[in-house]
Picture 1 (tube, rainbow, N blue to C red):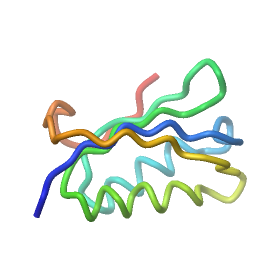
Picture 2 (picture 1 turned 30 degrees about the vertical axis):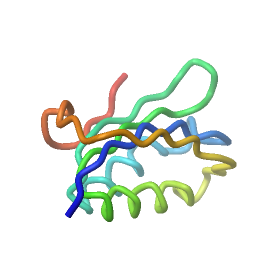
Picture 3 (picture 1 turned 180 degrees about the vertical axis):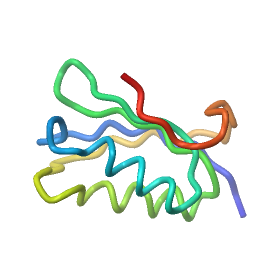
Amino acid sequence: MEKTNAHVIFKGRVQGVNFRAFVQRAAESLNVDGWVRNLPDGTVEAVFEGDRGPVEEAIKRCRTGPAFANVTGALIKWSPYEGKSGGGFSVRY
């Protein structure tokens, strides 16, 4: 299966609603590596690395988000797999 890297900026009500933990759980459940963090402008940035199918599924789940989130957009930049995340999925602060 093709490996890929997706850099995503999630927009909407995505801070203060448990969104980062939701992203982490979604990625881990699909064996996707990477990280997620809040940005000062109120968006959330994430990098997903792994097989393309599970990466796409993780992003799909995150577009829905947890109960109190309201994801209004996701800007995705696809690039070749880099393997720089070091394995696993983390929340960055």
